[in-house]
Length: 84
Image (cartoon, rainbow, N blue to C red; front, side, top):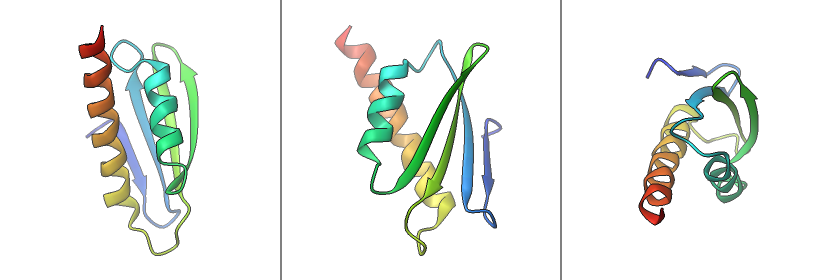
């Protein structure tokens, strides 16, 4: 994924997502659902969202947890489209 940067030493990940595909309410729901796993910061930029993830648990693997968050986002975006 070229829109995902994972800093293993700094234990943080940054994800850039298109506003056209991911509605903001879907991102906010995922952030809320992952509140025990990550500190999530969502910022809007030109046509995209930049999401920063910082794990709350020290023994958590940042890479694996980030991919779980991304998979969850994708599923939530799909479910949101189906509801329309």
